[in-house]
Image (cartoon, rainbow over all chains, first blue to last red; front, side):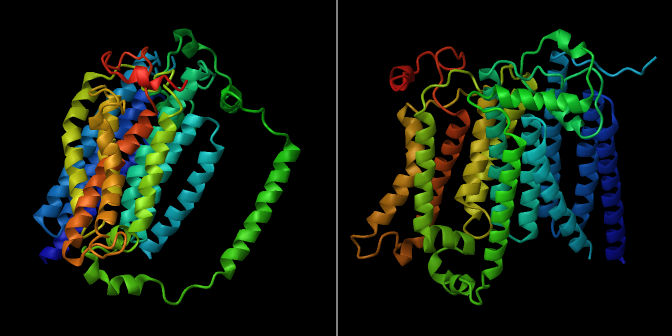
Length: 103
Length: 383
């Protein structure tokens, strides 16, 4: 019983994570400028991966493995936040104009 | 069924990506796609249960080679003037496949005049073509694009050779008895618990020894080309956030590298992967300006570069007076010797890869170099 419940919960987490990645990819392809694309990407990185890590952790054999997964998520968040800042900063330095809704 | 579908998707994506890498209209896009290709390749290796290769591919194929290529690209562009000021950066947002290009271009540390960003944009295809032409022409010594006749001749030749290759592959008889059984039977004697490490460091240690020689020759070759005239490192000063992240990550990376080295005796991992990971820490530290790039002049920098090959050789030769063959470890000391050799190899590989990334000694114009470093007197001699 507990196992089935755990499987269902893990499945839901993975699905939600997948949804975030899908939305992030769509955003990357469809958003109009660097800044908004970064927004879409980092959402996928942070939340999408978070849900997937949660789903995987539910299936982990031990706390040990779950902890490692959580660490991976933490590191990815650090790296993605910093690289997002770097890209946006570089774009700003090069005067890439932010997109405005055409009047 | 799902896994089968995943594998099919992975294989198709790899082929598609490989094509995009070759066909991308500008070099930066090719490089970025190549990094993605390397990562997916690592996934493919792990699907084939080859975790050692997957680790190496992710660390070297995607990570370090990617950094090396980006570095080369930056140097290419700074040495040929601002070839990048083509119409590919425009104020109108391009959609679709070029989004990656544009996002990545924003990270390019190149001086760009402000006016260009607001110039009217030609359509995307033209932009791509122009930038391709520019980049090809801009490479010093590069010839103009070959004629269509030559291209078709080349295509024909390639098709012929592909057919011959296919024929050759078809003729290969699948060996009934691989070396697998042989390796597994002798695992007891190898001194380690992981078959890949047993092959690399014991059964075929000679190959690994020669590989270390190749790596050393590669660094000597690259650094013998004389001091770099241009700084290949990013021109934009690294922000505080990057420096902070690098300071946070560097000790962690060293820890991971040590773990991979240690784990290599019993599970996937080992000197090459650990060395590649360790060199990634070095690359990050150098790029963020936390430490100056190595000059390979002081003794404490040359020792790690040489220690892998020399320690390996010393062990190989050292066992000979005791009546053993070259590189035939005495059974009692096998595991210890392998771990020691692997540690030495890790240090050498890390510094080798970092030195290849840095590319050569710097000239005095580069403010990143300590003025007290004595390398200039020695380094400029050959030019």
